[in-house]
Image (cartoon, rainbow, N blue to C red; front, top):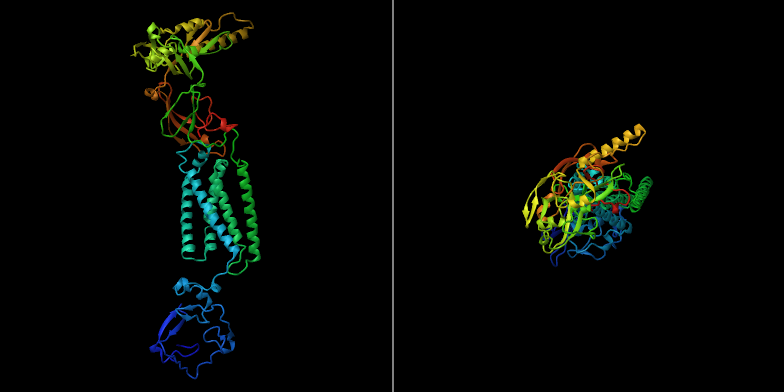
Length: 581
């Protein structure tokens, strides 16, 4: 053994007979064979040893600076059966169990003192980290693939910021990896790096907070997870500021650091409270429009001319247009020869003292009587699948196989614009006549029109009538005298009835009422207001077996268009007709 301050050549004569055990690389404790004694020979020129009960602060120090000690910290704990030397470094001894596995437990006196403040700080730090990571991932799932879920104004904003969903996913992924490494270093390797790792993650937290805040603006506060992500980020930043007020390795923070952290803590706390109150009381109105409130549609609301109900269609999926009666409880009890014109709606014919009867383009429930064909009624119709409005409804229903002739029954019939011509067919013992779309075509239900003392006209004929009436009125006004001539001329001397058609919705005629949203394209950069005006949709549709139309349609309100893709709502958004949630 080399005593402190001795020459390396002066060592024990019994060394050859002694085994040695290293203790944390700090000292060598001799373990002697039984009944043996260790004799140490020290040269006369060795510096004097310190008096008993004292220790020199380091090897080679003068005896005059030795200080007394009391070996009460370690008590009777031993390592491999030998007492721990009094001069063992306390800091290294506290790590012996983790580094060398030499002791079963670390003495209580050498363990770090418990601090409730640091414990609370670590708990808040981990809790806000978990909240932020979870909320931001959930916000990403609300945001991802905006092109496939473009049914709201929210997606119109998102599509205007290219790859925003990808950027959020990347930052979320990096944040997740960072948190895993964080857990390994702290929980597995037990490194005291919680505060350092948390401060190192601050740029990720700021990036997540900025993107979640942007999503809150775009959604007008109607999406929960972006709001939760923003609040979690603010709480995490407040926790970091709170950590700056705590002692670090026994040293209190400076006054300037305390002032800076306190200021940041107050500002972030106030921002968190204001942000939360704005969400609770629906104050996220930064981009709100009174005539286009935020929605949570799962499909695109579509309005079609001639179809009362709004349709909910999805991109790339054929959508069947289900015609529903305005009042399903209202049933027309028809007779054998009741034509579809019985459902016409009257209206004044301009300034003339006349009435125009317009065929319905809605769905209606009709109850048909039994045995009409048995008594020789309803044996002929005009058209096949699509019928002239002068055709008896029940005769057409028998021909289409919806009801049995001898039983009658309840059917749903739908009005539509008249086609260019009607086909002929012979089905279920009912023969249909083929004819062009003409007022001169013979139809079995003509009697109703005659009973009205009205004239059957087409839509173009009605336009001529209205123009003639307007011309006559203008001429009368310019001459200053009344014109006794009939303003509608010879086309319609009195009331008129517009031509119409009807059909039945069947499983085999699903393709007669269909619509497809093929896609959309961006034509400009979305503005802060009305971002949907920057997109047009490619749409095809067909109503009542008519010709298929395909057009590019602007997205947004357009009440005069034949087809309208409009997710905007005003007033009470829950009672709006264009709801596809």
